[in-house]
Amino acid sequence: MRRLTWFNTTALTFGFAFLYLPVVILVVYSFNSSRLVTVWAGFSTKWYFELLQNQLFIDAAWVTLRVAAISSTIATILGTMAAYVLVRSARFYGRTLFSGMIYAPLVMPEVITGLSLLLLFIGIGLDRGLVTIILAHTTFSMCFVSVVVSSRLANFDRSLEEAALDLGCTPFHAFCLVTLPNIAPAVIAGWLLAFSLSLDDLVIASFTAGPSATTLPIRIWSSVRLGVSPEINALSTLLIAMVSIGVITAALISKRNLLRQN
Amino acid sequence: MGRFFLIATPYFWLLALFLVPFFIVFKISLSDPDIAIPPYVPNLNWNEGWPGLSDFLTQLDFENFGFLLTDDLYWKAYLSSLRIAVLSTFLTLLVGFPIAYGMARAEPRWRPTLLLLIILPFWTSFLIRVYAWIGILSTEGYLNQVLQFTRIIESPLTVLNTPTAVYIGIIYTYLPFMVLPIYASLERMDLSLLEAAEDLGCSRISAFWLITVPLARAGIIAGCFLVFIPVLGEIVIPSLLGGSDTLMIGKVLWEEFFNNRDWPLASAVAVVLLIVLIIPIILFQRNELKQREAEGS
Image (tube, rainbow over all chains, first blue to last red; front, side, top):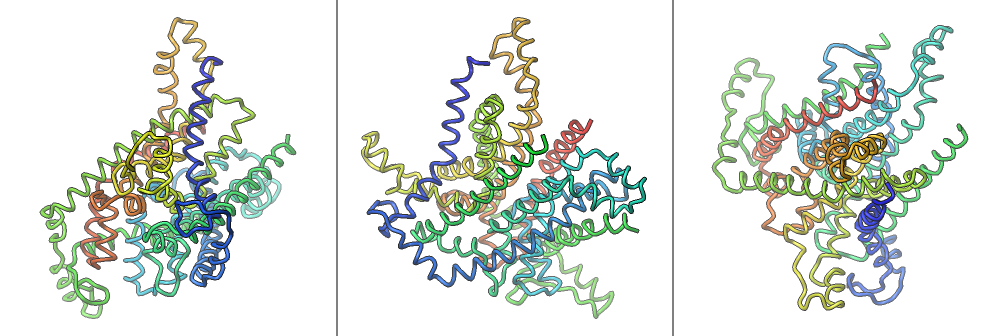
């Protein structure tokens, strides 16, 4: 396969340059001292200070974090249950519908999900706010959790669980003591995925948020529709830095665990 | 008892918050707009019993769907979304396949790092990644600055607010969705098959088409669906990068709902979009389940 290496190297170089260059430019220009975003006028961190004084963004950030923390936790519990059902229960009434409802939200355009949830909330008379965003985010992110967890669960040796049952464990105890520690990496990955999906979501939140609760993406959206601004560049840089540190830390931890197991 | 609880909890959650809402969208798509809260009539009045229900049912009609057919804007938006979705899926495959291939054939010790580099943008905010392109593609943007500085062009190119910008935005943001499934299927591939083909006189290129591509098929199909289906309803990218002439149905739905406050018409747009998508969604699920079974056995 040696002869193809030049092709692979070029493909990877251009591919990753395409993926990372726009983000790098964004980060670099967040330290630009000029308000004109595309003209470099020297290094400055003033946009970060302006950002930290903008109460609208800080309030929105708190709402977003609360929504993400709560919805991802509920989604992880429900998604793990759903994964367990999908992998372990070969047949029950409505299984096809169930697996359909797990897979469909993964690709469903967000405008449809958002609109339908809003009309449901209006129909049952639930006021739009924090609760409705949490319900909406839990619903779509539990499906992502269940897909992540079920692929791990499918590879897990079931006889270990059966051994625990033979030795007198209740099914619930067997799950907590044997299965859960084994699928824990996938459950944690699922939680992180649900958390970042919630942090990121604009469209569904726009439909389900009320005037009392505005999330950070909604704030950013209404600001970027007016064009590029240095404060948004600074905010983007902070968010990118947070996510990168989180993902890289998670990757390093899982690598260390893998080495330890071997 | 425990088993029932285990199945019922996620099941009823999804029924109540995923399936039932679709029926509500359908019901409201048959209603008429009204200046009220909520902004549509009729509303079912349970207190009136059967007469109330029959009164309610007779007031529902397919008028909104008729309007979608007769008004140019809507079917043009559907067709233009389909065209954009098909073409951008193909372009994403064209860009994504070589990356996935390069990753799968890289030295094993590099693969986790490469995988992390592909996944990292996927975790970063979608909105921010689209936003990053505004500064690049605008008339005074970085792309024009570089091209003019290097004297490749004399006057700045207009890219922002054109369909080209929308395609670039879609390829950029959806690339990880294409690369990951293709990488997964290529990485599992047994390379000795290629050696066997070459020993038997196959050229490198025909071995690629006869062996590598068919073995990556499930990954390619999954990747294409993961791009095509969400792009069809895309709203953020055409709103930020596209101009007023880039029609996409997700954007039309959004404007109908938030700007015109015509909820019944927005619901009708959503129902038609869902009907268009139902076949691709079912095919995607089949492909996923088949892959699952292939992995399990």
